[in-house]
Length: 616
Image (cartoon, rainbow, N blue to C red; front, side, top):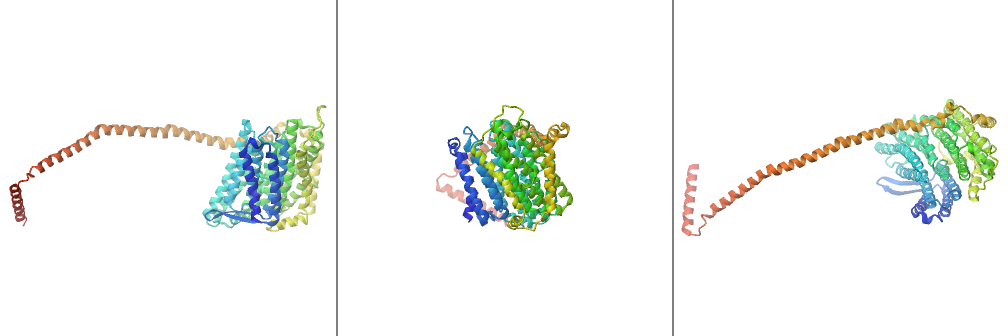
C-alpha cells in the first residue's frame, strides 16, 4: 500500500507541475485534466485512509523522508482531496477560457499535493519542504491576477507574514537536533524532548501554527488574501492552508501537553481569536472579508481544541468547517462573477436571483452560525466539553465566540435574502459545473452532523487514538443550539438596525483592528529604517573605507615603484658587477702553464703550513 501513498502525493504534484509549465497551449485541456486528477486523488485518499500505509525513503544521513497515514491524517487527506475536487469543478465555470487556465489549475494541484504531503509527513524535514511549497503556491494563487499591483501586494503581504511565522518551524527543527533527543526529527519524538530544548520546540511550533492559521496577532494577512480568485479563497481558507496550523497543533497535542504551558497558551489564543475575529466579521461590509474574519474565528475553535486536548472535537470542527466555508466562498465567488460585486449592500436579493446559490449559501451560513441540526453546532460542543473540563472560563469564552458566529452569519444571510432595491434584476443561471459542488457541499453540512454523536463519534475517537475525550452532556447541545437559534432569530428580526451601528463601534473592527497598520508601524518600518541605516553605513563608511584602502594601495605601489625599486635595482646591479669583477680576477691565474700552477701550489702549501704552525 505504500505505492498508493506515494501516488497520492506525487499525482497532483506531478500533474500540477506539468500543467503550470505547459502554460497557455494547455489551457484548453487543463480543466478536464485537473478535475480528473483531483477525483483520482480522492479515490487514492479513501483507499489509504482505510489501509493506513507507511512509506520511507532515504533523504539525508540519519534523516529519512517519511510519510504515513493514521487516523488524523487519514481524515485530513479525504477532506483535502474532496474539497480540492469540488473547488476545481467549480473553477471550470468560474475561471473563463480567456484566463491562464493551465497555470491556475496547475498551481491548485501543486498546492493540493503540498498540503497532502504536509498532513502525511512524519518527519520535520518533509514537513518543512511541503510547508514551503504550500506557501509558495499560495502566494502564486493569491496573486494569480498579477498584473493588478494591488493583488500582487496582497500576495506579498500574505506570503511575508506567514513566512515570518514559519521561521518557528526552523527554530523547532534546530532545537530538536541540538537536544540530541530527537535525532531523526520524527514528529512523534518531539514530545519526548525535555528541558529548555522542549520549550524552544514548543514555541517554534506554536508560532508557525499561529501564522499559518491566521490567529492573533497574524490574522490580518487573511484579509489581504481575499484579493485572490474566489476558488482560491474557497480552497486555501477552508480545508487547506489556514487549517494546516491547526492540524499541526492537533498532531502535536502531546508536545503541548508535555510542555506544561503550551496547551494553555494555545487554548486561550484560539478562544480569544474566536471572539475578537468574530466581532471583526460582524463589522464587515464586504462578504469575502466577513467570511475571511469568520475563518480566523472558526479556526480559533480548532486551536482551542488542540490546547485543551480535544483532538476529536477539533478534528470534527475542522471537517465540518471545511464543508461550510468552502461552500460559502464558492457561492460568494458565483455572485461576484454574476453580479460584479462582493459588497454586502449591493448583494441584497442575491439569494433570490438564483435559488440554488441562495439555498446552499443559507445552509453554509446556518452551519457557521451553529444552528441545529447542522454539523458545526454539535462539533463545537464536542470540543467545548473538553474546554469545560479544563476551565469554566475557557468554556464561557468559547461559547461566546459561538454566539458571535451566529450574529455575523445571520447578518450576511439577512442581506442576501432581502428584496433587491431595483426591479430590473433578473434571475442568474449558474452552469451545472458550478451548481453540482454547491449541492454536494450543502448535503455534507447536514450529513457530517452524525459524526458528533455516538456511535460515529466514538468510532472517530478510536481512529484518532490518544487519550479518552470528554463527552458533552445533553444540556450542552441544547444550550448551544438554543443560543444559536435565539441569536439568529434576533439578528434576523433586527437586521436593519445592525446595518446602522455607529461608526465609532464598527470602524476599528471593520479595519481588522488595524493589525496590519500596527505591524507596519512596530515591525516593518523599524526594520526598513534599520535597513536604510545599514545601507547608508555601507555606502558612506564601508564603501569609502574600501575605496580609501584601494587608493592607499595604489599610492604605496607608485611610491614603491619610484623609490624602493631603484634601491633594489641598484643592489642587484652592484651584486652583479661585483660578481663579474670577481670572475675576471678568478680567470687570471688560469694561464694553462705548468710552472705557474706549480708555483701557485707551492705558495698555497706554504700559506697552509704557516697557518697550521700558527694555529698550533
